[in-house]
Amino acid sequence: MQALFNIINLPLGFILKGIASILGGNFAAAVFVFTIFINLILIPISIKSQKSAVQQTRIKPKLDELKKECGDDKQKFNTEMQKLYQAEGVSMSGGCLPMILRFVLMISIYYLIVSPLTYMTRVDKTKLNNVTDTIYQTMNEVRKEDKQKYEDYKKLINWRDGDGRYNELGVVSIVRNDEEDVLKNILSEEDYAKIEDDLNYIKQKDAEVGIDYTFFTDKINLTQTPHFSFDIFHAFKPIWLMPILAFAAQMLSSLISMKLQKKINPDAPSMTGMLLIMPLFTLFIGFKFPGGVAFYWICSSLIGGLIQTGVQMFYGPNKMLARERAKELAKICDFESGQLKKLGTATLSQEEK
Image (tube, rainbow, N blue to C red):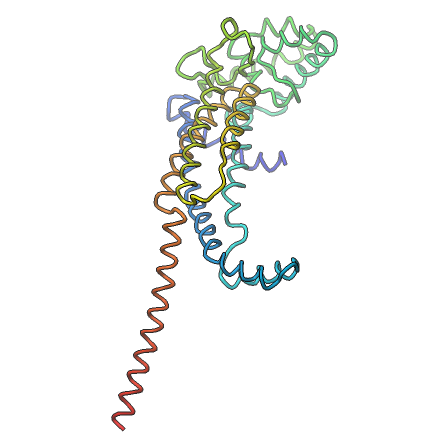
């Protein structure tokens, strides 16, 4: 699976880095433009999905007839349904493609954001792994011995739980904030000496690429993870705005989507529960991931929602179904017109005789 995402992410990382370079190295602006770019590419697929949904709505009366004919024989119904879909030229999976692509892209962009040194800075992987593995081993030992010290160290070097190779943002934080002295206190002299040259190489490479990971202000660094605390008044940090805004953007997008669906199908069941579940889930995991991931969700919800609204306005199921039925009526009219002409020609021929 990781190999698959490497194939996808290497070119995507090159594109994201190129956009950032054009925009003066601004990572947030690059993610915003990149999200617009991705959603524009998905428009034809979304339209195709709408067409597939319309075709399925169009043949629904025929499917209902099949259900009556087949009764409880599910195997016969499935066989006849496949034949009907083939005869009508309807894809059974057409509506799933956009969802699958969006899911794959969401995971890909997550890897892009949490692994900037691999996909954008393009540092030597062996040297990077040497640094992350060494820090991970020490942090793992500290966690076993003293959990509180481990939590303190995590905050100092922006470290995340899990495999050390997914802690590139911690390395970015170390080289950007000159936290080598902090790292020396965490690692043994022997371990630090083992990674010192590689760390300096990464620092130099990162400076050459020059990507700015801040958002509007230096106090909001998109490489940092917004660790939540119930002591809101004393522990609040500006980076908390990322998951909160992601929650608000998801709520807005869900509200618009629900209203559109209700307009298209007034008899559709209420989805109020799902309306709250997804934004709340976004808020919860937004405090577990780096701010850059939540920022992408903000962009994706707003841009994706806006574009989807436009697609619904021009290619909504009702409008497309009306067009399909108009085409069917036109074909029937053409056929009947042709039959009338043939009948008229035959009548004239008989009268001449």
